[in-house]
Amino acid sequence: MEVYRGIADLEAAVGKELGPSDWFPIEQDRVDGFADVTEDHQWIHVDTEKAVNGPFGATIAHGFLSLSLVPYFVSQLRRIEGAKMGVNYGLDRVRFPSPVRAGSRIRARTIVKTVDRIDEDSVQLVMRTTIEVEGSEKPGCVADLVSRYYF
Image (cartoon, rainbow, N blue to C red):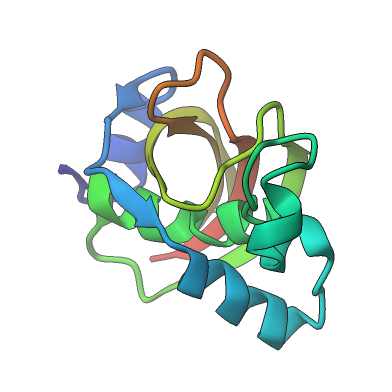
């Protein structure tokens, strides 16, 4: 766990890679739950019998399920102390290069891409997080998360 204790620490961390995180299982019940809350019940996600003969050989997690886990993974890898508030500001780039099959495990690495001052007490931070899929050469998700921190 990397700990940043203010803006200067964040600025000094640009280009630094953190990780990997712990492995995290992607079980079918999590995929089904995500389908329920997002109303995305496409068969490649929820129909285990049909998916065996589909293009991925099994059901796969929604790309947005993988993306939704980015803050969880980043929280395992770094902590920012002294901020009054941090908010998700958006995403600059997101890709899903490889499917994440139900029953697989994923983990993440992240790189501090940029830290830009908004004013003397706040910054905009961009971190590129790569979600690795155990046994796959390609990542399941690569996302540039934009956050703002107010000190």
